Image (cartoon, rainbow, N blue to C red):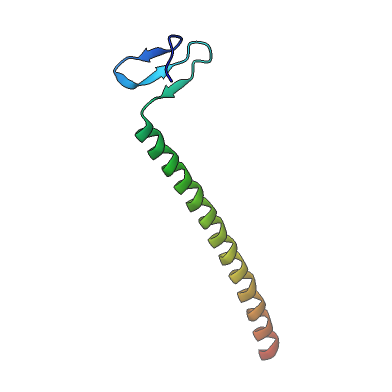
Length: 75
């Protein structure tokens, strides 16, 4: 995987730099897998938060409608 055209990153045995793009390459498959898992979990959490936020907004709207109807009944 690592060829002669990449440079080792000082003090990081699993990191290499591509001199053309200046990109840092991770050659530790466990670390890469952990990163991908964490990223997937963060995306899932964000999606869950968005769904919950939408549900709360819907509940607020419905509660406002109920309040309006109760005010009409009382008045």
